Length: 599
Image (cartoon, rainbow, N blue to C red; front, top):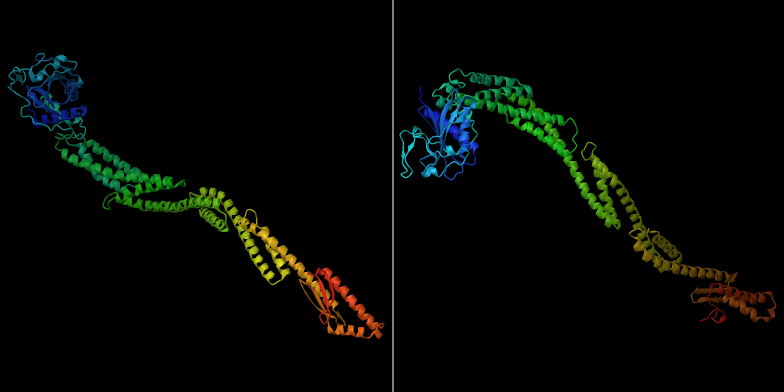
């Protein structure tokens, strides 16, 4: 019994085969398949471009595999043809005996071996050379031909005549031939529509659709009542299962369009729930992470990212959706946790920046220490190291950089102590140096005032100060040139003081010598010598004694003469002690006595 075949059914079968060829043989960019029926026998024409390199055996194998997957309860004969675009005649064909269970076979070849004309140049080089040589369908079917010399074709009946040309382009997605073309092939091969009628939601009530619509309604309530991630996951799994159950509904089902929309709705709702579930999972992971202190800034930033991953999808949930209540209950808590992590990161970044600054200061301190000489240099080094130590001491124990700060402190505290000691030493050296300079200046002032005793004392202080400066001090090199001139100045001042002291003693001695009840003499002492002048009173007494010889045996005369002798001897002793020449004059200026080196 023959049953009419709908043209759209053949078109769907052709599309299925065409897409499968493009998927299985990607080296060929263009395939076009046409299907027709002649005397209850299925005929398939496959065309490709002239420049394509094809393996006819592979093409026939793909067609056979698809047809066998759609086979009915009885064997069915199928004819397959290969042709190049633009040519009238096929260059290869094959008979297929398709049976249930995939047991198919090749029918006996028809036609004669070897073909002339355009088809003869395209013999199949596969294993079955006999079948490959068959260039045209036999006259018993719809295609007949005359010898290639005339290159004409007689078409008593062509099952492909009027068949629509499918777009020869690659499919956008992989098409499963069993789902797309099964019903049509069964219809064509069996000559009936049993396969179409047994597909889901074609003739009977669509149970899958009813379940999905019911779940669409119930899922709203389930989602609103959900309080945890697990409850949302359960709803999501139900939505996905219902969506998967709708997929087998074929295109020819009267429920197909509704199922497509419903499937899209279920999938969309499932995706929204999935986004919320992922957000809850990220929050759960972040909550676990914050149970232990972070070991690094990177770990804190990872926790921050987890909270952001949890918050961002929840903030995108619209207030008019069933997920809004659950989302709002979580958002406030998540935002608080994110704020806490943000504050931790800001605090740690602040301390880590200080550690970075400390490293820069430490490098500067190392350079300063290597070149430090003067007091100013050591003061700068001490100041830099003090900043380093103070900054490290300020880093709290709760900070990620605390351990590193303690390690650095162990290095820089001793350096600060050494710099402080050296600064103190340099300050003392600078003070001592300046003291030596100032004392020497004052010593010179006393010299100018002929205050030799004070000058000697100050020169001694200046020299002592210069000698006290440490050898490793910056001022040591400055004070060394001062020691020799200070020593010379001290010696000269001491000599001056000695001379001055001697003169003073001489004055005292002469002064005591010149007074004996009356003023016997006056004197002056300088570096030139001792000059003594008898007073007129003493000369008068002496002259009176000489002028009265009658009285020369008197006690007064003897005393005067003896006294003058004694006076000369006393003055001679004073002259010798002072190492100065002596000049004794009477009151009239006449020399009475001289002693010493007279120049």
